[in-house]
Length: 30
Length: 594
Image 1 (cartoon, rainbow over the protein chains, first blue to last red):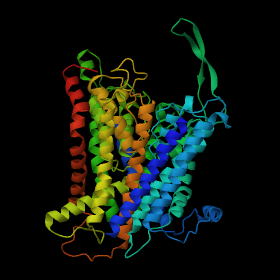
Image 2 (image 1 turned 45 degrees about the horizontal axis):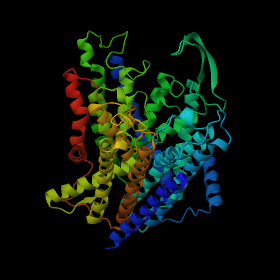
Image 3 (image 1 turned 60 degrees about the vertical axis):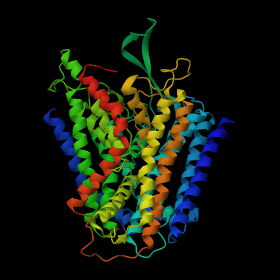
Image 4 (image 1 turned 120 degrees about the horizontal axis):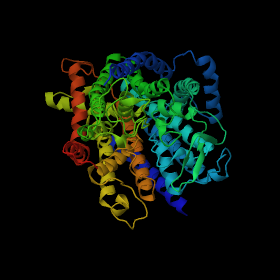
């Protein structure tokens, strides 16, 4: 159960990083 | 300090600088796909790896695909390291029968090793099985270092190319970094370390009799001890070369099984800065102007040496309170003198202070002495090196790409001052590059200060010293030294260094979670913007040099670049440093200790 918490934190981080990549791409296209 | 101490420091810098060009030139050949003397042996291995993994080596990626590939690879590595630690109790190569690592420590260690930080809240010999040390940690030592190098090379291609949509292939750069650079160097260094006495074995820990029996606290006779051993040499080599820093044993390279002799100490210390320094020459070679690489290397060295001297002299002068009590702290043939607390007698002041400065300049984080025992100003130097965002040599790859972000800012500000369009290596520096560079420069300080603030402002952060009912202790020292410990912890994690003021208790759920998250942001939220900069620069056309172009290889630019780096660090951290090492130094001179 606790493992899911930490794995979830990691997954959320990588999802946020994906959003950063998309954000940087959108900024570049502007 | 003795003449021999200065000579050792001088020899170290001389050998480092002499190796920059040959290694840098070799790495440039590797990354440009030119033939090297390793091709007959490693070429077939490289092609086999591509065939097995389905990588098309001649297909390049745009910056977004490159970034996604990097993140996916690193994410898989993080989850693998987490899983191996949690399952190590049922996996082979565990002769000491160590159980699963706790979830919070596993998360922190996984984040730490994937991000090239190698912060170790655990003690290696009592926590990690041999399989975990090798398959989880040592593998990450290689691939995290290779990731940093790959991203740097992508940026260099962005600077070197004109009107291009691609910046390379991440898988090719990763494989070439590992196969042609990290593995050969690590193999040679590991063999030399074994020859010096660094342990390399799968045997269980050894029980050995004391030469002179002693007694425990209850008066019972103690006649033997357990000596931890293991496959250490293979980890130590890449620990140093890849600016990882995570030791096999808890006291890292202060342990005689990790660092037995003066030669092992010299080579391990050299390895800390070697690749990072040589990459400056690689950069110059790949952009077609080696003066640019030498200029960046000069900026790094000119920042490093004065602060190294401050550290050495502070430690050599020792604690004035002890002098006032009649303790002889003067260096002589019979003693190293100075502040020897936390230092190995076999290394003395010079080699301890040099290592401390190099390891924190380089985002390495290994130690051969305990930074927590340094004098206030002696400990300020490693802390300050962290606060410069690890761009003074820095990590392999990450140091130079961090430095190039500062170069972009320096060029931009200089351009504003003289009223010209800023350009670097023929590429216009525009608002997009500035936005990305600004993100890179502001994230580490923000993480440092937020982490340190949460530590000192929350019950969970402060721990039992300030709240006796709390289940664990984090800060062990009251007063400014305790603040320095907290500040150092998050300075280290937020700059992916991994060293510690060892008086701080970080192995608890609060700091394992917070520190792990900090390390992830510190690594990957700099890596993504720098790849975006690479993609943006690659698309641009070359602007011909004109009378208004700011030369970026001159002493004037080097001085300006140094000023930008120092000013940014000072603005971010002088208030925090004033609360820690500065006030501790002033109080020490008043006879107050902590």
